[in-house]
Image 1 (cartoon, rainbow, N blue to C red):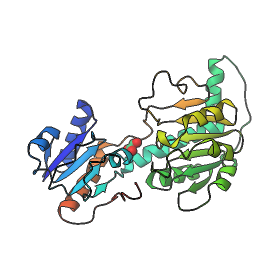
Image 2: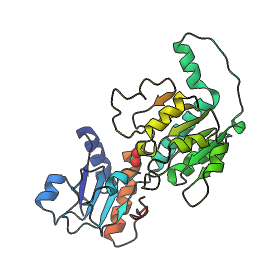
Image 3: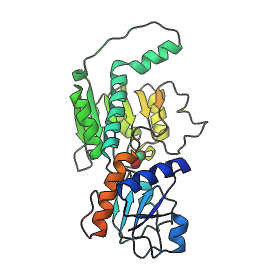
Image 4: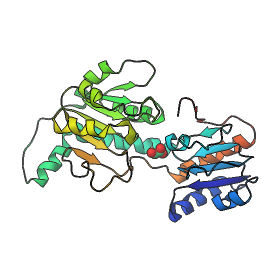
Length: 300
Ligand code: GLV
């Protein structure tokens, strides 16, 4: 089987993936972009990580596009993505676990006020605040896919009062009105882009907090900054941004009520993800159904 491997990885990342994929799928021959362009009839499948737009067109024998990323919004935004070829997103158990850990760290830190204590340390201030129990904290998880469900289960295990929301017609406003911490794990689709806007923050009780682990484009940055600056929102933990890397001049960097990560909440783990990708590539080439196939209409 001839498989194109392409993405925006650096040389070290590419080597790591190459090694993990070769171990999981020893029967494959791996092509890079140049090899696939020189002999487009060779590529039977593609394993991709945010490939440059255009890199998957003109490959007549392609049977599967397997993403190494869980979120396929950038992949689907490529107008040259071949229409008839199934696309599968990555569902990696190690990534689900890492995302649940990050959600737990953020919720725990917000619940106990540890970000506030960090601020007080920088100010040299010794001051204790009240302590609540986990079951007194309402956490709303937006998105009930792989990551949303794993994060919600981990938070519930920790004793939080967890509620989940998905875009299935369930009204969001009553859930927002009760939420002290919102964890966003929605897929980015035309319907969810910009969902976290001024109306969304206004629907939360005063002093709620936001944890965005999904995509930057869910957030209207000006509205989030206004909600933080007016004291409407207590704190935001942000892993993803409208522009990545976050530009050095962006107000989030220095904002006292923002804690940020460099899109690192959950990385795909080559050791487990290569096994998932290999099973899907074998299925596709055998004409069997592939797992975690993306519904292009729905956008995830
Ligand atoms: C990370 O953001 C991913 O979609 O895998």
